[in-house]
Image (cartoon, rainbow, N blue to C red; front, top):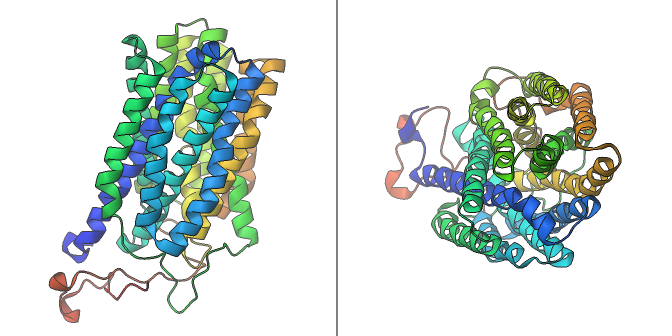
Amino acid sequence: MSAPSIPHAVHAARKATYTLLFVNGLATTSWVVHLPDLAQQTRSSDAQIGLATSAVGIGSVVFIVLTGFLLSRYGTRAAATLAVTFYGLAMPTLGFATGFPVFFLGLLLGGAGSAAVEIAASTSGSRLEHAYRKPMMSSFIGSMGAGMVLGTLVGAGSIALGLSTLTHMSAIGVVILAAGLYACPRLLAGKADRTIGAKVRHLPTPSWRLAAIGAVILVSVIEGATLTWATLYMTRDLGTTAAFAAFAVTAHSLGTTVVQLSGDWFRRRYSAARITRVSVVVGGAVMAGALAAGNPWFALVGFFALGGGIAFVYPAGISAAADTQATPAPGVSVAQTVRYLAGFGAGPLVGVLVGAYGLTWTFYVAIAFGVTLTLLLGGFLGKEPGLGRRSGGDLPDIEAPEPEARPVADRTPDLAIRPELD
């Protein structure tokens, strides 16, 4: 497909979507590397740490439902603007945490803002996949992974410079607001796309396939658990310094990013089912070997492999869930609700397991869980290479601005431009 066949507004929306997801990833891991200090500063036990991190899931689920409605009712720009504003103002709350209640509240507000930004940007990404007629979700989510890598490095740098958590998170809040000022006006205008000839639904249409996709997405919860406990595993079980432990999060995020940014290339050649099954098994096996070795450098390799192993599950799940619906927003909302609701439940559960059996054996359990679920249900993500067939029906193409419109005879065959249905 030649570049001139894509309206300029669509290219601008693609850049804006990448920007929002990148900054969301940056903010997500900026606080994670401060977790050992926050745990000590707030005198939180392992169970309390698990409960506090579950607050991310609580805030996320509430705001995913609200944002999904706003996306369907008022469109991507309005929902994204609200989400970015809330997120940017919420991030500094963690800096004020001197006890468990404020620690919990900070993660609650941060998780809510992050989830709202993510669902708005992911819905935009799902729509853009069909505008470009090719898989793109993996690279969209990969841009969030790239932001996560930078976030860990920025966080580690702030620790090395002796910056307070309040100073660091306040700066991150400013970055979020600045990114929103650039990106939100450039997202696609209009309400959620309706399938040609079908009525727009603000609520998801249930199906067995959607339920199975939701179950597979549970595997992606391992990512959040790893980001939360990786630094504590390095410092407690392997005896590293806090600065060295921060690179465990970096390695995990880097592995995630490498696979996601290359995922669209693989997705055009192999099915989502095959990619997820192979990657989860290989990544889990490498991480299990690193745990058995008990060496800090091997652990970095293991976290890199584990991050890459589960990296494709979430973007594949978003695309598949969106394609089960008549319009992308309800499907994306379901995928993200499952992810964050599971994160809410996983936090306390992991905390209890860590307290009872230690971090090493808890990681073994997580690996076994991910491999088993992927092998059983991965086929529901799609068994054909490429973008896949929408069971929800075809989406309308996006209208080019009037000055750029060309005669019908000159248009590229695979992107006939018809008016967008608002």
